[in-house]
Image 1 (cartoon, protein in one colour):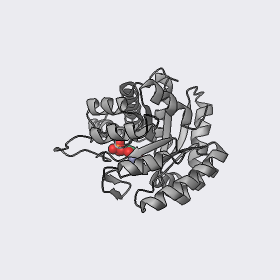
Image 2 (image 1 turned 135 degrees about the horizontal axis):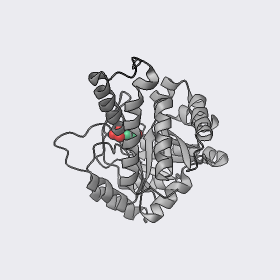
Image 3 (image 1 turned 90 degrees about the horizontal axis):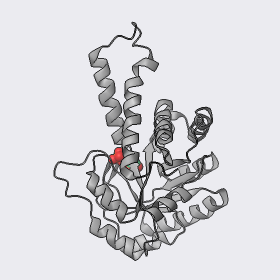
Image 4 (image 1 turned 90 degrees about the vertical axis):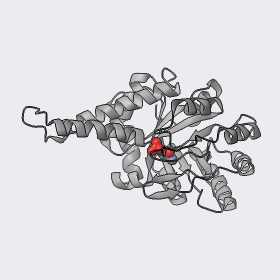
Length: 288
Ligand code: G3H
Ligand code: ZN
């Protein structure tokens, strides 16, 4: 069913794999993610950023769309509807409008404020049965026009945030949104090892910015307690490449390749395939 992320993340953490978080943008993207999860028999997190929520028409629109597709497509795997990098206002709104999971990204606030607001949010989320992700340190790169500094999280802050009752924690370890630079030095897996030990191996960590990361870095991160992996750009790259190829090839679909349902098909299928490959790589296939 449509569930919060607590149980699927706890199970992944206990069994040593990671659940895929995919960002959605529209109807087709949501269908592609649901099809990928169902075909792989994998639990999945469908996420929407604040920008994507605005684009799609609001939190209720997004939550209802995922729920309605879940029914009409006869999906059977567990699916969470998650707010990605939300501010406080959006986190409360999403919880009230049918999201089952929220990330409060207070990484741009003073730490004490981030901690205090996260605690308050956790209390409200518990009443509603919603799971919560928080962030310490920050994720580098640009997403939806928001520029992150990419600070490695502070160990003490990791411990304090882990004790707020959150379900999962995004701790910056040099990961960035979007493409990684040519000279990327790799994730700070030493820092992750310390966070893992400092939280007594009890806190499921979230790795943002998985697109373009070498597979061995991802696999190692999973062995160090990462149980949720956020993927956005990877599906966009797959969609864009396939769609561009289709348009450039000017294949004629009985003279109606201007029909958006035909026009978008190659891109949507490529996005689905990219999602399936990610699910397999994270080890969450056949875990539903
Ligand atoms: O919150 C979303 C993710 O961290 C996505 O990052 O576009 O690099 O995969 P990505
Ligand atoms: Zn992110």
